[in-house]
Image (cartoon, rainbow, N blue to C red; front, top):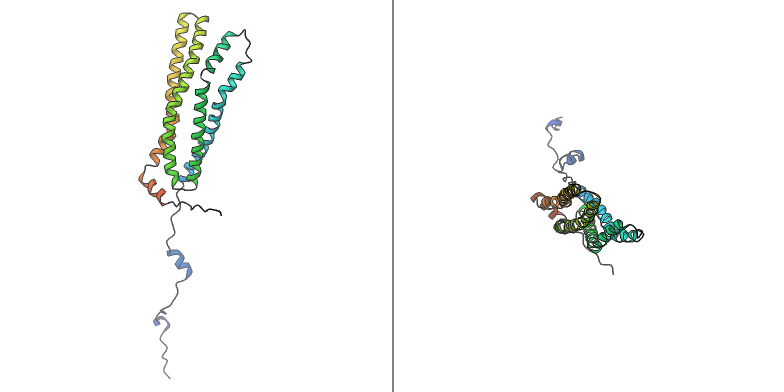
Length: 222
């Protein structure tokens, strides 16, 4: 009796043979991991916005608080009254600067939240905030500088009464140098993050990634 069964090694593989699951999982391409920069920059924007909102709110009410404090200054203290009067003259311009800073800071918080959520609109909103922040910083620094110059003028007049001409000139020079350095550093600090935002979102790689984000549809509740 002949044995017609072919050797085991010569048997052809079945046509519908299934690949082991482990082998399939090893060769299926896995999607790339999401980049982390939206979360990092978004959180930084939220932090800067929160700090700016606190500072803007304080700056908006500080001139009025100083005016209230000035009401408790004794009538006999002429020097203190002159200082508070010079500050009161810039009460409303400084209040406007504080309110503007508060609005921009809240806008930055919204920008950061959208970026963390990978919203496509976060890029355009960040750019608008950056341009507005740079322009606002120039105005804010100008107003703050004029207010400081008015206060320094009063302080120098008081110093000239108690010091000689040479001493008053030295104080005036030192104050002017400190004011110029403060203006330069203030503008550089205020514009550093907005400039970074404009440069970052202008990169081609970042643009392509932002365009790949999908906006969530708005569902109307009836």
